[in-house]
Length: 128
Image (cartoon, rainbow, N blue to C red; front, side, top):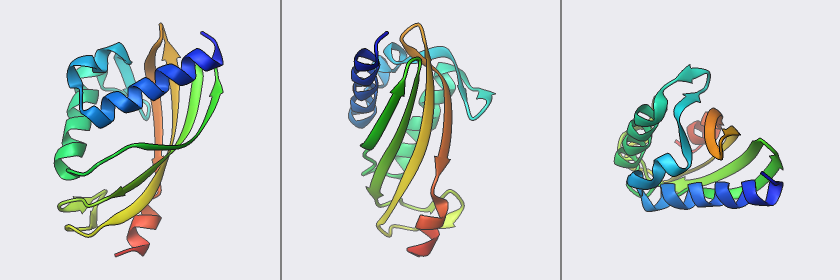
């Protein structure tokens, strides 16, 4: 898969998340996906994302930048949202917060097999 193809696939994945099109998630995410080193599988990944949208009804994934080195993608995602309660152990409770996530993906068979995510919790804490 070329870098251009991988970038298009990744952008399709982000669009799938923003539509909350869970029926299509398996087109982008491998059945045996690992998240931060733990195998959670596609169903666990979907459950995690559904929980994120329940906790943050206005959640929207915005790509700030991408670095593509097949089979890997590095992305900085921007979030500007209003979580309902706690977010990553912080008492946000309906306040609007902005933060970033640095996330790295490894693709296998044109689907995400590994995800490593680092969320800027300090940026959230500074806004409370």
